[in-house]
Length: 346
Image (cartoon, rainbow, N blue to C red; front, top):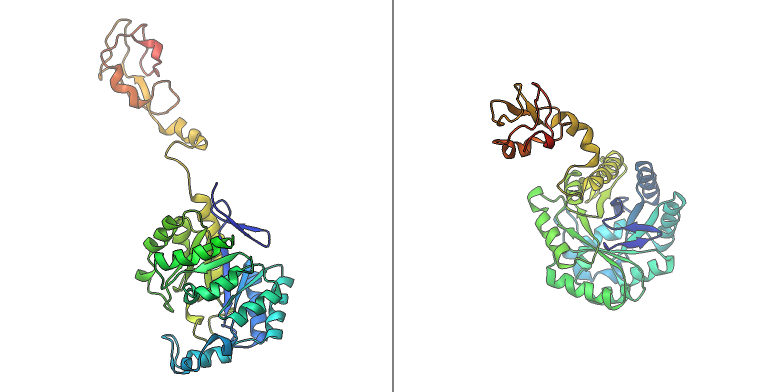
């Protein structure tokens, strides 16, 4: 049986339509009202899951982080997260608002305190970012909660991912694995579907997918064709917003298109190389069968001068058997332009 995980009744795996996660993250820039507006847009787009980021900066970072400037920003990571973090009451309001729309709220905890906050909220699952993939103390803490995990694996090796997976397996916690490239935006040549495939091959019993930071839906759609069951992109209600992740975000229209197109591609997967039964109506006119092209007397030898292959494909002898008829003798008089049957020669 193919692997699957289940979050709030939504089964996720290769036998089910891909799950598109709309990650609001910190795109709200610390404004709860903006976050609500983004949730509204995600709902209109048809998103099933809205993902947030839970930042409790004092527990998440040391003061050294005040000197570290991310590649997609011009101020320190500490300052960004102080500016963008929602407090506990605000985040609970956000969770309740998402759920009031019939969507699933999940979040990424970046610290032990953040994990405890989300535990108090009774979230149905946890999303773990690539930066925490090898943060084994935090993973152990989260695994003890017993809730499903979606784990991004960017910047990590198969070996370090295996250590993370072992933690969740030890606690019997379902875990799905997302390939990621942590550049914002990600150049297309660094998406590396080969790495995603390698991840799947290394952990064949785990649901897998892509957390994408490119500028359009192409990477996610390609991932679905290769078997991905989860697609995550940053999300904003409109691209004119400011913030470090806006550039690699999808808006309402792109999200809607991703949901529709990913399900279409999911339906295209699978199959075996043989005629589909529905193709019979086309086979009937498109295939060729063996026909007489001259009158043939009983006992006459069949040659390329008196038989050939012609449409439609409704005759008894398909063109692929033509050569086996040459040199046989007709068992009856055959008129010109008849479709032959196997009883017409010996």
